Amino acid sequence: MASLRKTNRQTEDETLVETPDLEEFIGYNLKRAYVIVQADFRRALGEDGFAPRVFSALSLVVQYPNVTQSGLARMLGIERSGLVAIVDELEGRGLLKRTNVPGDRRVQALVPTNAGAKAYADARAAVRSHEERLLSNLNDDEKATLMSLLAKIRASEV
Picture: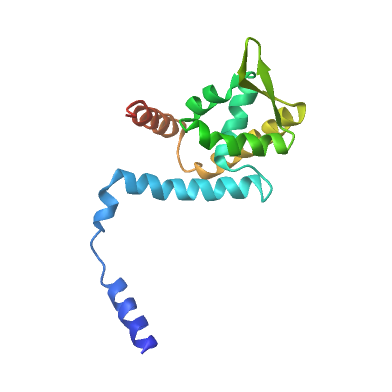
């Protein structure tokens, strides 16, 4: 019975000549592309590397030292509560530290450590290589167009 199912599946797959309806949806194609990009990103940074969200958070803390946790959450487009685990991970790895904001003891700012700045520089180089390799079939104009189109989609966020 199992071999009969396999044969039916093979026959079914072989008779597919039309393009599936899913292929006409931008969201579906973006998701499929994202899965490929994310998997390669994780391979590029290795087993002990950063997840994309953690890399993004560290990047912004390095570029904007003393950013508040609320400000960082806004920049990343995530809930402040979702940021806590990311900040805890980075702090636990010795890559950033929380500091008090003068005049408001309720607010904490985030500052990269020297190890955090170095880890970010190393990870940034790996991510740059990953993107160059992954997008090597696009020319510079196509890459610029892709970035421009993605920026337009991001700008329309509701």
